[in-house]
Image 1 (cartoon, rainbow, N blue to C red):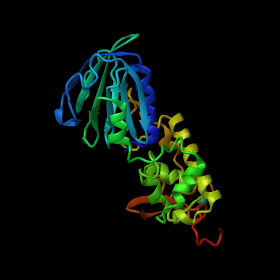
Image 2: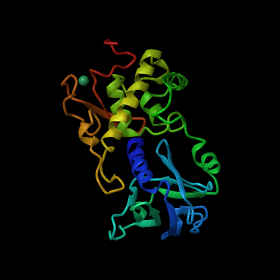
Image 3: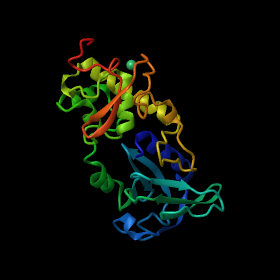
Length: 280
Ligand SMILES: [Zn+2]
């Protein structure tokens, strides 16, 4: 499932094509994939794209008159910019024709499993209120102190807290495990019992991990592709995710795995300290 780095990669590439472009036409091929009005106008026809924004794993495409689309990629969803003459991909549910400086381009939203969607709103404020208000601060921009405050208010395992989009928006299973390993924090550590210094260090580790992943174009674990159809390269740099039983890249001991808060979790029993660890 795409997490913040994959969604940010999509945002940057789509923004590079459509910001400033006029939407010549828009069409919902599968009506049920669009939540709200699905008319060409609701899908931004005749508007000029002012910005493509992101909060956590959610995208917004905003026209200069305020009309806005919320886009969620779900498990297998992808916004694609088609090369000239490229046939429409399978499972395309919405398509746009945009007039860019370098000519007409087709942008499509394709999604095989249809856990994603496109939401239509008359204004960006309405989108924010209806789609983003329940989300916590974005994981890429939250200040360390606010992050530490938020962790300090929950007794759940820190892995569960990181996955809670109301506490912090954008981190999922991959980057939770990677960040916890980078910060040397055991995934089962009760959040509120982390010292202030370790909580702040974890906040920095999350940003460092996300920044590196964005620079690599995200992680392709199964389905994710960028808007040109290319896989993200960051999976090759994963230190723990997908490496259970392999040696820890830092200490060489075998990485452990188990289920924490319902999700498969991989960690190093030596490098990642829990509250009761004798090494702490
Ligand atoms: Zn280790």
